[in-house]
Length: 375
Ligand SMILES: C[S@@+](CC[C@H](N)C(=O)[O-])C[C@H]1O[C@@H](n2cnc3c(N)ncnc32)[C@H](O)[C@@H]1O
Image 1 (cartoon, rainbow, N blue to C red):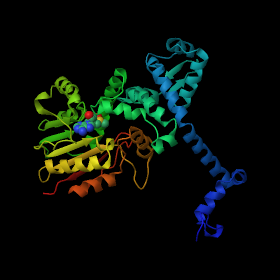
Image 2: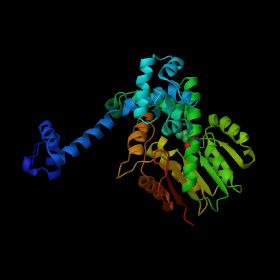
Image 3: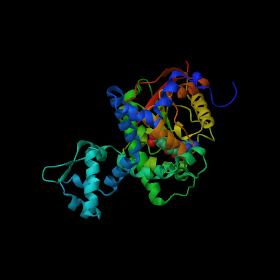
Image 4: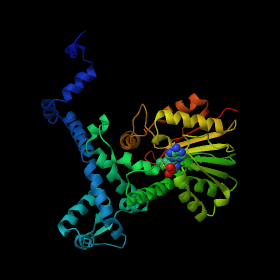
């Protein structure tokens, strides 16, 4: 059959149905019949939720950046009081607070004053979350024209932002760099906690954390396992922060700091476990393949590899990995989210066996894959 348009009778039943649903006339008709009415309404409400996602997110940003949530930690406040301290007109503050109530972040009391709701308190309490909310500005600037982003036609803000993290010079203001370091360090605590709930380190005597950043993962490992020693490998620029963090935690005697790039050299030997925490998704497949092969070579027989980072749902796309982190890594221009099964496949190709993919606790925080070098 030639031509781009297949004749109507060759349409699959599902394509035929979707074309029908996509007609304005069908939508009008469906909204009148009892069964289709409820489906049409539910679809409508869900589509609207997707549509207003950006506005919700920006309203959350306003609540964080105008310190409304933190002000409410001090007790009930009126819109006028909150407006005064945030330098926002009372009427506009009342609108922002209505949005906050609708998002269940704040509550309006009978006397008209506002208090924190549990969800709003959690925004303040979850380590790194307010920094993440502020940091979203950089991603959202890149997401302003998503089709151009997908075509790869733009210089993205995140691509300029990340070289700092990679230890290379980047066009990043000092303020931005400080904010970002804080964000990474604080969010690392959550990732470390979830990872260590899913991974058993029994039998491990020395762990090498590749791209360990400011050391929050190793700090948590060492605190929970008094008999484990550690090596942190990261770029030279990151070392002072890591050294400081281990010294504050009084763990410097149990950690060797190894400054270097996994792109340019073999990984240090001597560890019976290697962790890659939020490292693979920063990099393209060729870099990841090379890194996994270096990890395999550095481990002894029976040595363990731990990969922990937000992952795609693969065949079953899921919200955090396939929407947020998918576009985040695309805007970074260097990496990509991968599914647990594609990470397993890449590990298998370099020789790892015995894969475990424990059920994730919070897919928006991290997911875990572990495997072993054959004995
Ligand atoms: C997204 S951060 C993750 C840091 C830490 N593992 C965490 O979860 O917070 C990626 C880390 O990899 C490090 N990194 C990037 N490229 C590297 C390279 N070529 N060699 C060693 N470390 C590298 C960065 O400096 C950074 O600390």
